[in-house]
Length: 151
Image (tube, rainbow, N blue to C red; front, top):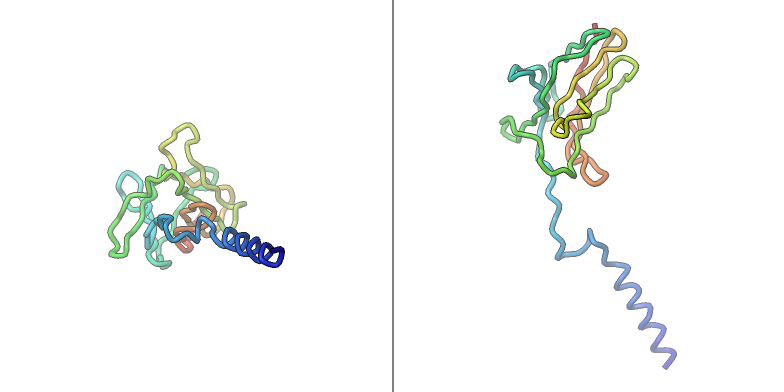
Protein backbone atom coordinates (compact mmCIF):
# COMPACT_ATOMS: atom_id res chain seq x y z
CA UNK A 1 0.00 0.00 0.00
CA UNK A 2 2.82 2.39 0.89
CA UNK A 3 4.44 1.72 -2.49
CA UNK A 4 1.29 3.00 -4.23
CA UNK A 5 0.79 6.02 -1.95
CA UNK A 6 4.16 7.67 -2.60
CA UNK A 7 3.86 7.67 -6.44
CA UNK A 8 0.28 8.94 -6.16
CA UNK A 9 1.39 11.88 -4.00
CA UNK A 10 4.17 12.75 -6.46
CA UNK A 11 1.71 12.62 -9.36
CA UNK A 12 -0.68 15.00 -7.60
CA UNK A 13 2.15 17.42 -6.69
CA UNK A 14 3.49 17.45 -10.26
CA UNK A 15 0.01 17.95 -11.71
CA UNK A 16 -0.66 21.02 -9.57
CA UNK A 17 2.87 22.44 -9.95
CA UNK A 18 2.66 22.30 -13.75
CA UNK A 19 -0.53 24.34 -14.05
CA UNK A 20 0.21 28.01 -13.61
CA UNK A 21 -2.27 30.72 -14.55
CA UNK A 22 -0.24 31.72 -17.62
CA UNK A 23 -0.03 28.08 -18.77
CA UNK A 24 -3.72 27.34 -18.47
CA UNK A 25 -5.36 26.59 -21.83
CA UNK A 26 -8.68 27.98 -20.58
CA UNK A 27 -7.29 31.34 -19.34
CA UNK A 28 -7.84 34.19 -21.78
CA UNK A 29 -4.79 35.26 -23.77
CA UNK A 30 -3.54 38.73 -22.81
CA UNK A 31 -4.17 41.38 -25.40
CA UNK A 32 -1.01 43.30 -26.20
CA UNK A 33 -1.11 46.84 -27.50
CA UNK A 34 -0.36 46.49 -31.23
CA UNK A 35 1.54 49.66 -32.08
CA UNK A 36 4.26 50.14 -34.67
CA UNK A 37 5.39 53.65 -33.76
CA UNK A 38 4.89 56.85 -31.79
CA UNK A 39 3.35 60.13 -32.96
CA UNK A 40 3.93 63.27 -30.85
CA UNK A 41 1.92 66.42 -31.50
CA UNK A 42 1.14 69.79 -29.93
CA UNK A 43 -2.36 71.16 -30.59
CA UNK A 44 -2.63 68.80 -33.56
CA UNK A 45 0.69 69.96 -35.06
CA UNK A 46 3.24 67.16 -35.52
CA UNK A 47 6.35 67.45 -33.31
CA UNK A 48 8.10 64.13 -33.98
CA UNK A 49 7.36 60.56 -34.90
CA UNK A 50 9.02 57.18 -35.16
CA UNK A 51 7.74 54.19 -37.13
CA UNK A 52 9.17 50.68 -36.71
CA UNK A 53 12.21 52.13 -34.96
CA UNK A 54 13.08 54.66 -37.68
CA UNK A 55 12.88 58.43 -37.28
CA UNK A 56 14.56 61.41 -38.88
CA UNK A 57 12.91 63.82 -36.43
CA UNK A 58 14.47 65.69 -33.53
CA UNK A 59 12.48 67.03 -30.59
CA UNK A 60 13.73 70.51 -29.76
CA UNK A 61 13.67 71.44 -26.07
CA UNK A 62 14.50 74.90 -24.72
CA UNK A 63 17.38 75.06 -22.25
CA UNK A 64 16.08 75.92 -18.76
CA UNK A 65 12.53 75.73 -20.14
CA UNK A 66 10.00 73.16 -21.24
CA UNK A 67 8.22 72.17 -24.40
CA UNK A 68 4.58 72.84 -24.96
CA UNK A 69 2.24 70.05 -23.97
CA UNK A 70 2.71 67.06 -26.32
CA UNK A 71 0.10 64.37 -26.90
CA UNK A 72 1.48 60.85 -27.26
CA UNK A 73 -0.35 58.75 -29.82
CA UNK A 74 0.73 55.73 -31.80
CA UNK A 75 0.90 54.28 -35.29
CA UNK A 76 -0.74 51.02 -36.29
CA UNK A 77 0.82 48.66 -38.86
CA UNK A 78 -0.57 50.81 -41.73
CA UNK A 79 0.90 53.99 -40.25
CA UNK A 80 -2.52 55.28 -39.18
CA UNK A 81 -2.45 57.38 -36.01
CA UNK A 82 -4.24 55.55 -33.19
CA UNK A 83 -5.10 56.56 -29.65
CA UNK A 84 -3.20 55.22 -26.65
CA UNK A 85 -4.51 52.15 -24.86
CA UNK A 86 -7.42 52.76 -22.49
CA UNK A 87 -6.58 49.82 -20.24
CA UNK A 88 -5.31 51.30 -16.97
CA UNK A 89 -2.92 48.34 -16.63
CA UNK A 90 -1.01 49.61 -19.69
CA UNK A 91 1.22 52.51 -18.69
CA UNK A 92 3.39 54.91 -20.65
CA UNK A 93 7.05 54.65 -19.74
CA UNK A 94 10.22 56.11 -21.22
CA UNK A 95 13.98 55.97 -21.10
CA UNK A 96 16.19 59.02 -21.64
CA UNK A 97 19.82 58.30 -22.57
CA UNK A 98 21.19 61.32 -20.64
CA UNK A 99 18.90 62.37 -17.81
CA UNK A 100 21.29 65.18 -16.83
CA UNK A 101 20.31 66.87 -20.11
CA UNK A 102 16.52 66.52 -20.25
CA UNK A 103 13.63 65.25 -18.15
CA UNK A 104 10.06 64.26 -18.92
CA UNK A 105 7.20 65.40 -16.72
CA UNK A 106 3.45 65.15 -16.64
CA UNK A 107 0.77 67.04 -14.74
CA UNK A 108 0.48 64.96 -11.57
CA UNK A 109 -2.82 66.55 -10.61
CA UNK A 110 -4.55 65.47 -13.84
CA UNK A 111 -5.63 61.82 -13.79
CA UNK A 112 -6.15 61.74 -17.58
CA UNK A 113 -2.61 63.01 -18.29
CA UNK A 114 -1.04 59.56 -18.76
CA UNK A 115 -0.25 60.26 -22.43
CA UNK A 116 0.33 64.04 -22.19
CA UNK A 117 3.96 65.02 -21.67
CA UNK A 118 6.41 67.90 -21.51
CA UNK A 119 10.18 67.76 -21.86
CA UNK A 120 12.28 70.12 -19.74
CA UNK A 121 15.82 71.12 -20.83
CA UNK A 122 18.45 70.92 -18.09
CA UNK A 123 21.74 71.04 -20.04
CA UNK A 124 22.53 71.88 -23.68
CA UNK A 125 23.28 69.02 -26.02
CA UNK A 126 21.84 66.02 -27.84
CA UNK A 127 20.37 62.86 -26.30
CA UNK A 128 17.61 60.37 -27.13
CA UNK A 129 14.29 59.26 -25.67
CA UNK A 130 12.52 55.95 -26.14
CA UNK A 131 8.89 55.23 -25.25
CA UNK A 132 7.36 52.02 -23.93
CA UNK A 133 3.93 50.66 -23.07
CA UNK A 134 4.35 48.64 -19.89
CA UNK A 135 1.89 45.89 -19.06
CA UNK A 136 2.23 43.54 -16.10
CA UNK A 137 5.99 44.00 -15.80
CA UNK A 138 6.92 43.72 -19.48
CA UNK A 139 6.90 45.91 -22.58
CA UNK A 140 3.94 45.54 -24.92
CA UNK A 141 5.58 48.15 -27.15
CA UNK A 142 8.99 49.76 -27.60
CA UNK A 143 9.38 52.77 -29.92
CA UNK A 144 13.08 52.98 -30.64
CA UNK A 145 15.13 56.14 -30.03
CA UNK A 146 14.06 59.64 -31.01
CA UNK A 147 16.68 62.41 -30.94
CA UNK A 148 16.24 65.22 -28.43
CA UNK A 149 18.14 68.51 -28.82
CA UNK A 150 18.37 70.86 -25.86
CA UNK A 151 19.42 74.39 -26.83
